[in-house]
Length: 149
Image 1 (cartoon, rainbow, N blue to C red):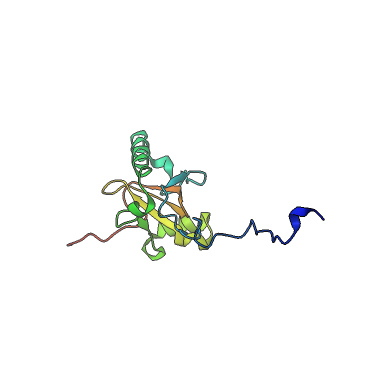
Image 2: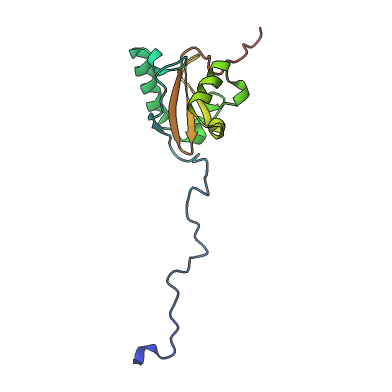
């Protein structure tokens, strides 16, 4: 055919460079390097932990605290104050409300943000997204034992 084709072997343009490692969700499945994002689509508005119980001042406080958390990364937030909740640690009311609204396999994603001594925002942490679900102004969703009593 043409003069150009004599003895040349085309390079594979699609061959990956072995020295490069792409950043994907697989390399950080928990999205710990990401800043958190919020979703409110499934927020509970009724029941013992519904957002209907929050006052206007509490809503403003929640918005302010979540705004502060947006400046941090998940690995900075995930500690004793902000953490996953085990199913057995939830109150009976919390377990009943969860069972009514969600699938069993979502139990492992229940996460709590501590806003103050008692106040908590409870939701589901799905990868880097926190789904805001419940308002717990009195720390009753997952009550803790008081120390030294």
